[in-house]
Length: 402
Image (cartoon, rainbow, N blue to C red):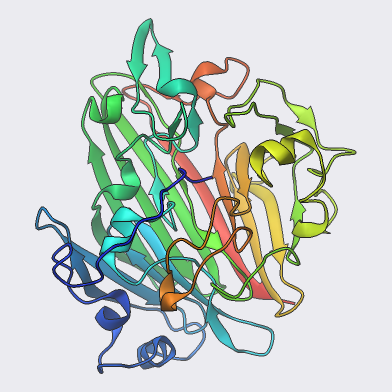
């Protein structure tokens, strides 16, 4: 669900943004080592939790950006302090062959100039706000417009373009990083001083858990934090996701207008191409002439999740399965909705990791969230956060094969 980015060329030199080592170089202990070799150097035994930190680059303002790589010996996650971004997700297929299944870049300038939110933690408000406007307690607020006539993912300089503070989290059961960012009152037009901490932890059972926590001081605000990781389960840059099979726990969805803003209707998926309640290949109906698919150029819609949360406060949201390689990603969340996006605006205008081009339909994103434009939709679940309240949310991605 990205902003429509122009075609741009970026100098890939260290001087372009004061860049240090690229991610691939930053992670290596021996010059030229392949990613698989670097992971192996951290430990190849499933269940052995390890983490390391390396430099990734420097912003024009002189702020250093780091990459944290953590593994359980089977799954390996690389994350940047830039945007609290998932850069790489390395998982094995059913034959034990490990590939990176997450889209991204190997250098900071491309993240800064080109990224359509690859792997980023987005906020203060993920998804769209109509015309960038909302009213809270009688006060009107304006967020910078960056997606047609609407505001997307927090405006022109959202949380995805901030350098977050990072703290290693490690227990005998999980390892990862807690990222914190403090957004001052008025940043991107949002009210209140918002402190957000998002913890990404990987356990021995191949669960990547994301815990969101936020508080606001001074004024109430609106908040909708999510992560925008793009997956291709056969490996990033390998081609279309049409054959990936999706089961989605969503009996309804929120139709949108021509600007991809919800109309306010909560419509049943039954009898439409939006019905994934039974496992169905993503590409089976994506080119149908349904008006909503035409508007979105594919799937770019919020789905209303069904069922009630379990004792841990989460519920099954979706399962993605790639028949070719057997990789599976299962999602559980405490959120009421999820934006399913099929990479409709990827156009091969830039090179990703390994100098691979990403084309339309080459990846999917599944952003657990509250609904788009909720501040202007009184029948949607509220996204208001007031001083003295605590915003919490949990989403888990479970990696497996079958």
